[in-house]
Image 1 (cartoon, rainbow, N blue to C red):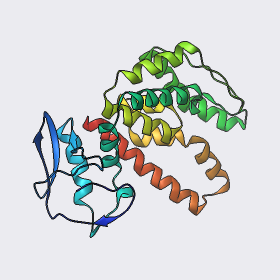
Image 2 (tube, rainbow, N blue to C red; image 1 turned 180 degrees about the horizontal axis):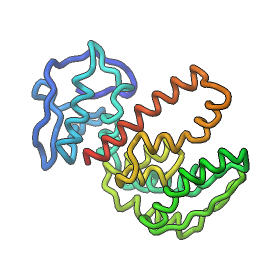
Image 3 (cartoon, helix red, strand yellow; image 1 turned 30 degrees about the vertical axis):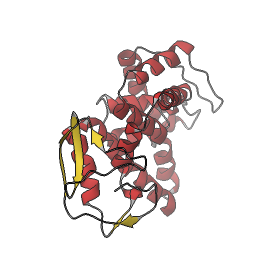
Image 4 (cartoon, rainbow, N blue to C red; image 1 turned 180 degrees about the vertical axis):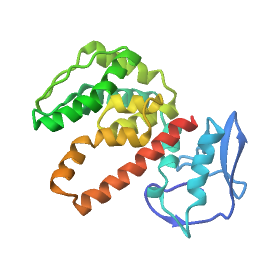
Length: 237
């Protein structure tokens, strides 16, 4: 009863529910627990996270599509996170902080710069106060190194998270291109919609001027749905 990578398999269950198991909460498919390809049962830290994943299994049709189950993938990723995996995850989050989207302001036009200052500025200020860091801003596409103390602090904060929050932070930082937005979502400072809007501020500005490309719009819609899932994930934790 494993979820085989990204390949589809036929649905083999009728009923989905959750229940306490092994100090956490498990998803049950006709009273049986789904297992990873390595044989690990799907056990979550809270009932809310288990229900979030159970809803994905319940929503499947005749075939199970792993691509439509982002919370399930987060659960498996957290359960598979070993020491090396944690170290890699922490490094990735620090790397996103080192080239954080919110620190790269435009040199023009002035209306875009004003919008970035008005909308990104308060979030950077929040991060500096709440996380105890300092970020360098630039008005250039040239990489601006962040202070080593900032990267060390971000890595420390990421490493303090449990496996389930850590995989969510990595996913959020990857989606937004921003560790700042990832932590803001994790800590409830921003909603998923707000964080995603900030991550797409430049794209939205260009769309207002030149129109929306259908392919880009479809891609943005898929990313917005992923952001909502991440917001629900953090809330459920």
